[in-house]
Image (cartoon, rainbow, N blue to C red; front, side, top):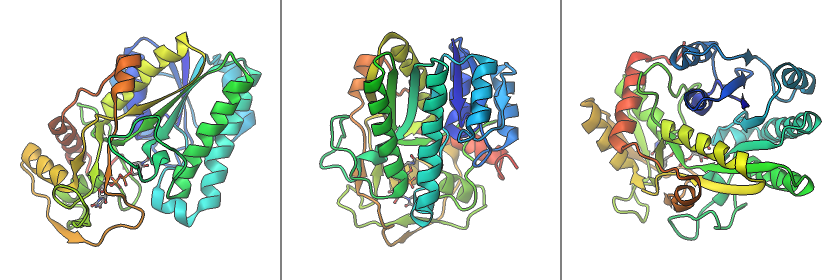
Length: 337
Ligand code: WQD
């Protein structure tokens, strides 16, 4: 079975490419390098031991995407490609709606023209907005997003659902990620955010490596055990393996199914800082700062559905997440540059 990974040169895409190859799939990667680099493709091929086909294209480019499908014969798609910075989406909403939704519509049109019926979508827990209760089940209300990025994920979930209703042979799996962190155990690939990191773990690791002066902890007055925000951090390799499990499900089912990909355990910002220092023996200076607008106090998954239906659960520990992050960051202080 040949699987196209759109955005497969990115942080989650590259780790997922390796896991699909290990599971015996043939893969093709398409990426426009808007948030990734050619070196990531080279290293992914090196780690996978496979020189998989790579297309430097924008998924919005229907002619080029159609040519890829004609040349390769795609059986299924994992759709990662999309802009993903929450803060940036608030500054550039039209760019986010156009890129993330147009790319999905073009992809669906080309899939339909080529009879490709299976798609796994890289969604996000951000579609839940501020949850009424935690842990969050897949049946919790969605659409109460707090930013345009989250709304693109929510709208795309709806588009894919409608496409599957119109074509009963389609299989759509929506994977709602919680907070992906960590890196491949080799330290050769990892998270390489452009500019100043928005997310906690890359900011911690860049502080540890001396690229940032200190971490600002956004708020220590939340209604949480230590006052700092609680999230469900999941190792990116566990997340990648969740996609392989989801593809097995998609191959055997039609219709739409949604799964949380999280650990089911919430850790606070201070938990993460302490765990990182303990795991790496490297200091991470920090200070308390005001809350970041749009942040919520607690967000962590009820991960039982993926375990029961996909037979998948996260296995890597918080120490694995910190250790593997540090191995990547310390060996690549400037990412792939
Ligand atoms: C985690 C915690 C911050 C940075 C976002 C997106 C979500 C997904 C994951 C794409 C919060 C605190 C952070 C810092 C801090 N991305 N923090 N200092 O906001 O839970 O989720 O990334 O799908 O869609 O919304 O992740 O890592 O930004 O924040 O104190 O410098 O760390 O307040 O409590 P978040 P995050």
